[in-house]
Image (cartoon, rainbow, N blue to C red; front, side, top):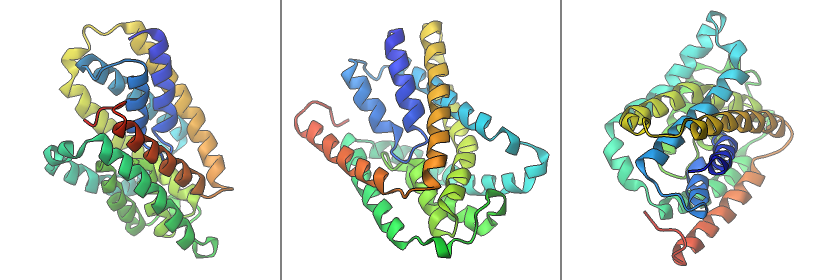
Length: 262
């Protein structure tokens, strides 16, 4: 992997990780176009740049990480528990779900879901416009929706934002809570992958790793900031359209043998 590859993958990871479009398929397609195989070293690289993107969320919400917000973090941890428990119990079965066809169909299904949710959503029915006022019940609902993210291609942020909107949160509040929930979720997921692939880091080129990490951090920071402004004014329908088109494109690439369904 070259520094240029690292920059490209860092941008892709940072931009797609927290937008409701799923980073998985984007990394697969870009890696394929760059001629990079899913070796242990490249998997380890993806873990590192994912940590960079997660730290961008920590930086954005730094003012929320203090003892004054302990009640908020109790809700975040409650929302984290369904995914932690089910993800651990079904970790082997979940791994078997991973095919590019599954990812493609979940892109399409997720896109359609956005249109349905936006049809049901009404500003008049919004009960919470401030993330500190999210109830434990609403936090649990968001956490249950996050479980759907165990299915490849679903999008963790997409599932949790939808769950928040359906529970009575405004789009902006749902996005804020989703991103706060990403902190324990992504650190747990990255930590698990890090432990599994720790032996692969010794031969990794430090410059390539460092560049990917920094680029992922910066691109995630910009993407999240812009997305938070976007959801205050617009619906998720644009992302729904993107997901449907992208899912159809994936199915086409699989059918043409350009991407291997594995």
